[in-house]
Length: 355
Image 1 (cartoon, rainbow, N blue to C red):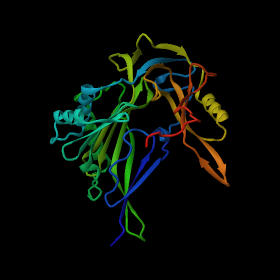
Image 2: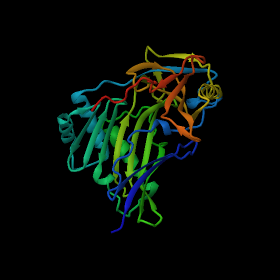
Image 3: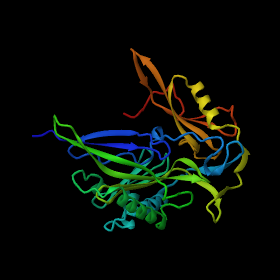
Image 4: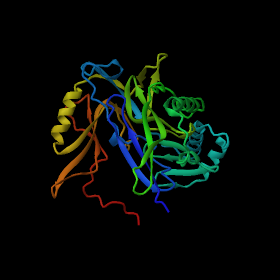
């Protein structure tokens, strides 16, 4: 009997930097049906924004705008209705939104998330921490054997159709979302027989549309659609904070009464110098200029920050060991202010108390 093994690799590269990112998981025979449904914060890598040309035409030497961001506390029918609308983005003709709502309302919450099954293969979920709504067609994601690969162009057409369904069905509003400029990544599936070199194939084409405010991205907020190489929609998700703003006819946004405009006092080069000085023995990855509402904050008026992923490194027995990282953000309004850090350090934590 051959020892056949399937694994998948998520390679994600930003359009600006082209930096590849890898996430690998392995199982036997059946392949991996899962994978991240929201962006991995540690792995989003973009070039720093120059002081002369910030996103949205705003110079960091002039003025920026603060907006109120929030993560609504959703319960019951509201969650079930929105989950059903997101599931509609898959385009399934076999499971109705009513069936999804019923299945979700009957499910039990577990540690901040609700998972439900509707039909033979549809899985839906909502996670409180970043208000993630996701729907997965497991009959599609588990297909590791089909040889058909429709290619990127055809997959992009399928993605565009799924995005339109999400908007038309009320799963998302299209404010600040540009489906013509998604972030692109792929899930690769490797197959091999013991003693032979594995053969790698594309399993899914992944399209992520980040939410932006006047050109500046809202961190970990947007829409994601994965298209299987067969040309079927594999999974859809919406996630992240909501923006309290007024939208003009041209798509530009102005803040509500709590927002304000201010002169920026921190640029990209100064922020990078500061994070390197404050974390001299760490792996530092630049994410870029972002609006960011940390997951432990329900709502806040947020100014753009220069955001970094920081992972302390230690030399142990001659080997460099990289510890778990955090997100570190520096305000463009207060160059000397304390950075925003998430998750917050907890040196006295005793770990998970559950049995």
